[in-house]
Image (tube, rainbow, N blue to C red):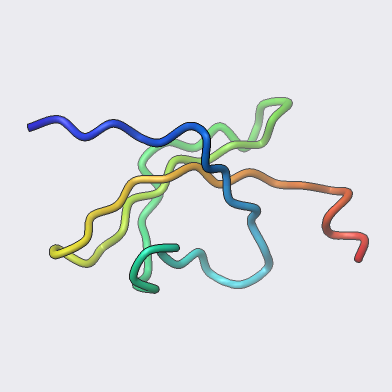
Length: 65
């Protein structure tokens, strides 16, 4: 069964390693578009019981705070 990524949820990256917003486990990068204008990555949770896939973006305005 194919899961769809919820594109209405976009998470902001930080200096800390990315963790799953659902369960808190570490993630792996599936696709890395950090070289593009939107600086986007697609992550997947490493917890086999969760396996949530989600979008992470850089936000330079957010980093100022």
